[in-house]
Image (cartoon, rainbow, N blue to C red):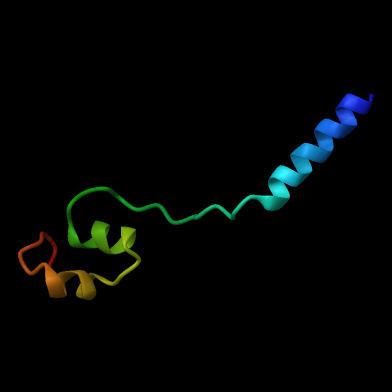
Length: 56
């Protein structure tokens, strides 16, 4: 019974110390919208430096 209690304590500490999960999912294509999503920028910001990029 003590093993289960210690295991439960370890699991609780694991979840308590873990970082929150990022809910945002971005596509991996080399388009303005995908890059903007993955870099947490606007499409306008991405296109400013990459004028020939698809979607700009």
